Length: 359
Image (cartoon, one colour):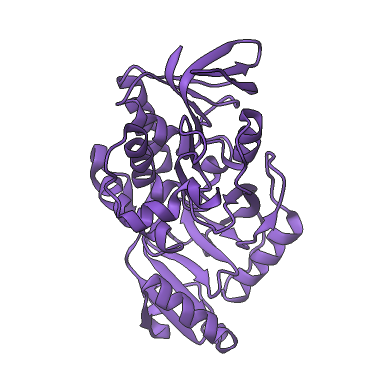
């Protein structure tokens, strides 16, 4: 018997387990062999406060101090560069306004990203308010918090059945263990609706979307460590320095069933072609490729807190592409609501994130 059972070992479940471990005995269940196996392990790992819808932006801003300072911080400077041709002026203007970027000239853009082809873009904007997130360290910090408070983390623990008794949840695991808890937290990522169905809880209507990524060599062996992340206007592609190379994505959203995602070769090739169109150096080889599923609720905002019909079933789901950068504030909100405390976030944001909006 445990007080709180968390299903899902990605950033959503791990951060929620860390915060909830201050309230009682917590056990986290992850069916894979390691934490962060699926989407959390395949993130672009960027913190950008203005990225997302209003409630997401509120979570981003509320998370900034924790990410920058807690346990020594997990952020390092990166910056964000946006470019476009005249045919994408409307998309460029919308992105600049939404992400609070400053217009810059071509010379400044070329100084920031020296491989740009000046003939193939007409507009550029930049913001220094974007940081790399050390996602591995952040997850390690949350895992240490769980364990320091007496919680346990179980990998290779696949949920096979969920039953509600008069007072508790009974969860049957592979290969036959049954665990009970007073509170069940659904942080199962792309499988969140499936966990709800197993528990007899009304589903939200989450949709997982595939996003492919590829790693390419740095152009002409350049030191790209200080280059910013670069986007094509309208998020039709992006690239980011990573461990001496570049990761490039077509930024696609292709609806899929929950599964262990892999990159679509044709889609990835199209994205690399869009990137290559704006560069001087051709892409001659792919070092590796992968994909993740970014799972969204119908309104593309997170679903956080006790279920409207059964408060002992708690949602921490729908992180989409915002899981790491929202995790400190999102997990704190979940813990505040479970504990019956006044949330640190404003009431409008809490309502916008509540599962009750789908009841």
